[in-house]
Length: 572
Ligand SMILES: *[C@@H]1O[C@H](CO)[C@@H](O)[C@H](O)[C@H]1NC(C)=O
Ligand SMILES: *[C@@H]1O[C@H](CO)[C@@H](O)[C@H](O)[C@H]1NC(C)=O
Ligand SMILES: [Zn+2]
Image 1: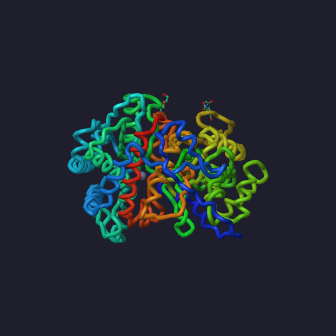
Image 2 (image 1 turned 60 degrees about the horizontal axis):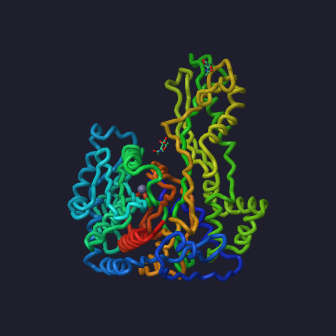
Image 3 (image 1 turned 90 degrees about the horizontal axis):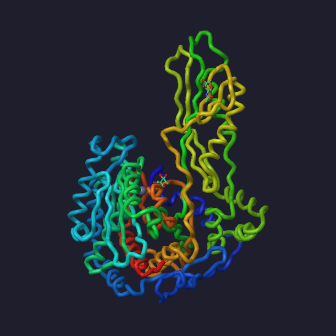
């Protein structure tokens, strides 16, 4: 993930609410899962709905046609030989330090990209069968696309994605690592190193699954496409940006049945008895806005009452005094998440549970609920609304010269229900009185909103950073969401790493962005989910001591295998 948000931070408010002490005991409605012995299809799935009205749950879905194969592979995955080979594979991938930086030059010009060819050599050597049997396409040199042709062209292919790059390791933190960041060391429980969680575990898991399926002589009915970008942690444009164009040209618009990328995982609550899996079904938007004040310069001995810097300060005060009001909407993803928590959260206070229920119909209750949830955890305010943060400031060149210009950059994460235009309008309204008070022309995105005589206040895009909130993936039980949910449940049912009494799957809004932002044209069914628990990461993402629970990597492989086989049987 980029933008410094690990998947579990993404679930912030959710964790707090799930962890609230109950103010009265409420019996938890235990779920039963069952094996569905019908081929997956629209009709098959629609009969599987079980559980709460407000948070429909799919049952566990196990492959039926491919049941023996799935069981055989699970047997192989459980062997010590397979495990140690897999741990060593992830270790090997970690040992290639594929760091990506902001402001990289083009591939072929900037020598820092070359390290990716080292990763390719490693993968080619380790996954010989996959490289020889699948069609391998390199996009913009380091982007990797694997095509595994299915026998039935009437079925839309599935797309599995991950990224090859990692965030750089801060040199001054090097000695804080228990095991060196590019060691790939396996200590008996954890596999250590930058990329172990984000995102080489998923990348390796995908390749392992395909290699193992090939080894078993599996031939897919439904085409499988795998794509690995290489600059997700920076711009994303050289990797997934180019891959997206290639895929749209090669396969067409809306040409994939589903897309599974990195993202959130699952949370264990009630001492691990209940698991909440929270695939992200949408992402917030993003924009950086430059606010610049330009006034006349001159000698500092005869200053005006307010310099550009002083005026910019007023502008910043105005911005920070007018936050976007968070909105909890009934048709939005955050409300859906809290409906699931109210329906199935074992420990949440009864009053909150009732409030969620009432909020489904009652506007006052919805408003009360919004503030109650923000009160429980302020992160909910970021979940429900557009956030703004003044993150950069610049102005002045010399102590005896009046600053001719001063500027700040305001970072925005745009609410699911909002848009870039709304953010721009908001800022324009907030800054208009400032421009008028200081007699400045207000130029908002190229339009003079007010005219003034003492200078300019300009609002514009910084760094070209403009991203609308993503489309929202449908979560009906007759579509791809059910296959993902059912696969998550099937995997956790037999889990030795994460034993639980019941599993709930809930959609969630991601507050950061992934490579999927380039893939919107390819399918409406985008899921950002990796099958890892909150405690499978030793210390979070993008920081020191990144390490992943080795056994959890095996379970991710089981999950992906079942996912691929379930999709191969599905008729949607
Ligand atoms: C905006 O106003 C400035 C003067 O402050 C002027 O030079 C410019 O041409 C105007 N732009 C537009 C688009 O009207
Ligand atoms: C999606 O398609 C639209 C319309 O063809 C195009 O303008 C846009 O660039 C595409 N988006 C991406 C991320 O490729
Ligand atoms: Zn990532």
